[in-house]
Length: 114
Length: 117
Image 1 (cartoon, rainbow over the protein chains, first blue to last red):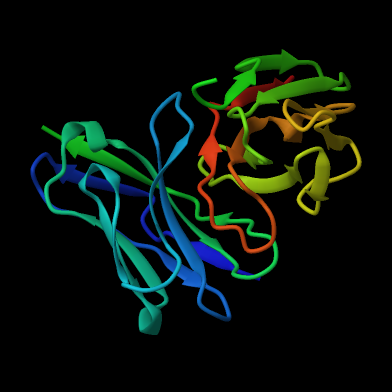
Image 2: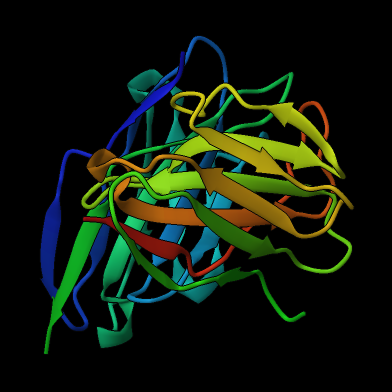
């Protein structure tokens, strides 16, 4: 069974600083990988996803993530954080083949200081 | 509609009562998913449909939970004889095309916050 670990419950950064949110997954083969963002009172919104090919994935809102098979990681990055990026971020892994049902991590709460 | 809608947004009920949570997916979306999200946790899969057919209900915690999507559009998640441990955010998502190995994006609704007293 697949699983996801987001080791940081909270991350605090200053506006304009760079950001990296960590995600490690456990799965026997190459997985599908996703990052979602959840703002208060809103549903989850997909930021980016990796299925195959280029391991550096570009997403919306200036985010990117890099799939590293050797480290079983899919960390999310942004070069310069904006105050509006404050939200909950979820990494998810889905299994290739068969029905795709994602398994989500517990989330990382991003706090942005002015 | 413009997005996935869920109703009610908040539901407070007493232990032992039945509740029905509604999800209205994006028009034309084949697949519909239900998740439960406890406070401080990520969404946990409950069940999903392609059209009106329930494809996977392995995430439903027990037989008090059921879901239907009779006409392949709106779906209802029903919890019978609610217990305090059922308190959570219940989220619905839809995607354009389901099926094995589907890679299409899921669009999430705002959720229904259920509180069981």
